Length: 554
RNA sequence: UGGUCCAUGGUGUAACGGUAGCACUACAGAUUUUGGUUCUGUCUGUUAAGGUUCGAAUCCUUAUGGACCAACCA
Image (cartoon, rainbow, N blue to C red; front, side, top):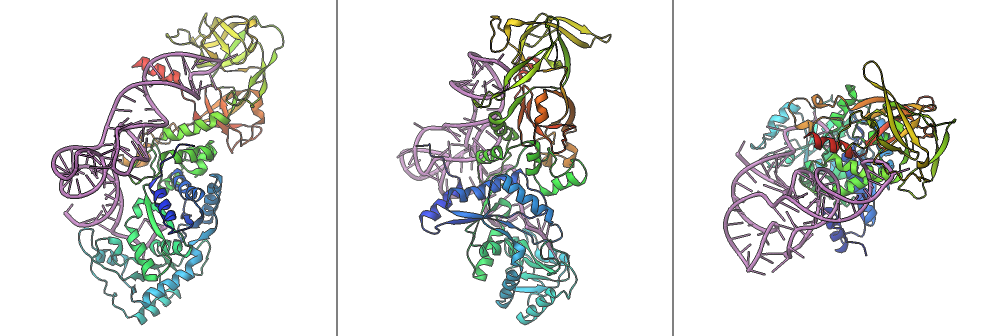
């Protein structure tokens, strides 16, 4: 028996609903507006909604909340579908609020006939004044008491295109002094002579969110309509409309949206970064968008695991991006192919090595017993990382230094005999001797070294472009800082370097996940070509040495 | 100064009136042909004050702090 995992508050509600017989199966929906790309915050909602119907009987619809033609585009629809699928979820039905426009129009007529909606000629400024403030009640619109017949006629004329944008709205007749501002005669329909991505020019009046979302839920028989906390005040209106219309009683439940530090998750802000060229696009590998994370090398598994671990609750939160990276490394460590790439090379000449060189074997993934091995080229001249040598090493440094020995990964132990420098004192070449009896796998030398270095054969190293990504912002909460959030962009979020890679990387394909040993996890970028390989750094390896140095310094 | 929602280590999340637990982070150690991985251990918490109760993180009251609400956005 596995340990009983505690339920989140939504699972508790659902289990109650199921055991009480209120429902025999549940229906949820993921309702994005196609006005931007999905981001990591949406992933949480996707995992929640789809996860619930994976765990309990029922299904989840994908429904586009496309009631505002001026901001919505087909490009976004396509990206959203791709992202949800990539995350590993399958929707029962692909639906659009715009498919319900005729039905929604009929609902509006129904409300007018009940005397619960009226056509208002007030301008948006006038309406704002009528509305009052959170502390002061509003006042009735002068058009509030039009007759049902007049309203019916006017609304039909609105639909027929007789009025320009902004001159009339349809409002619910509720209570202008209601403590909940949303209940003060909310606008239901507005006039927009705009081209809709699906309905084209069929309509010139469009329902507002409040008159579309709950109704769509109801039409689809959604049992649990899950949204974020800022919609809590909408629930009263959501319920009111369903009651007045006498339609299927869907219920709205709210949870707190997940905030992640060192980034922003607001479609408006992300759009700004794209439009103003701070990033190369919605799928820039530094973006917290699903498509950005995908290009960066994140796996769906790691994102799902992350969403699972942060859970669901109602309180304000700021999740540490370190947890996302932990989930990423955890998965990548299991699946990534190990490869050797030197970023900032310094040449090592093995003065006692004779002959043309040899092929050595090295494992593809020590975590995977079935991972197999591959041959790597070894010879008299190799590259190692400049950082892996120090002329005057501090204590606790167990890499290469004059007179010191290290192992070359899957090869031999070498000792540094001589340091060649140029006139500026810069190290240009290290002359070392190798220990022939120390060959990896058949070491009879009896020598024990603390350090093992990655290396690449100098003669046939492959030059590749490497894009080293770091967090997009310098501060944990850019939105919370003084001034514009863009003032806090990390100027070093991308650094392009040249890597000297082992030859096998020539065969890399887009789906491959690599660990460049002692460096980090990498994958091919979509910009890569066979002639010019480009790798993205997905995430670094944890760096224990950096920690030691930091502790020594302080 | 109206209404609504929320409050548990640095972070996220459990405990459903009965021993405050788990994960991440941090720290210490062991293992290691990646200073990675793995393993072991340690630190840190119920916003406050009252009340109910044999017993309160949990129920009640008040206070405090935070979030949301005055778009013809969603």
